[in-house]
Image (cartoon, rainbow, N blue to C red):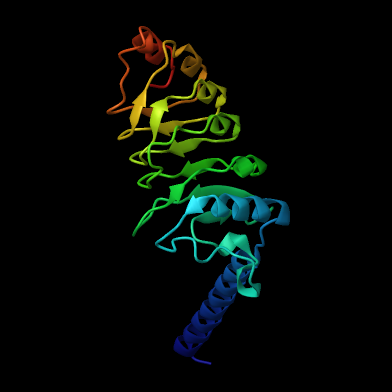
Length: 209
């Protein structure tokens, strides 16, 4: 076999090997299935939402919807199937209603984005402060109002907290937020901090800001 033919043959084998490897990898990703004890809490979460735009139409109990790792906005671990991310920032329409505490069953959740939805002036649920593995929380422009929950001070792993564009105000004491020792980004734009006398001191205590 000539050198040219040998080179082409080796190249063909290499290409076939890479293609096969890619297909196997895709197959492994698509084969990831979510856990039933996390799928059901998501369905409860959906039941409490108003979804006139059918943003969550991929969520359901049908045979073609059993794997919640394929649902819109849901990202699972390829290794364990645990739900890691919930990104429900809409590209069209918006979600409303209430946020169910069933999310507490997603014990591995580290990313939650509910920004640019319309929760119609509801207060931010205090239970979000019990999602201890959260590293990213974005509730920007989601039509929340009321106090910033002091329970957020429990989120010691949180690296990014975005609350801008809501009708929020601080309690008289923001000291609990100084416990967010991992925080690298904090956005409270358009929040009313006039009732808090210590917010500057609190921000200064955050080591990574």
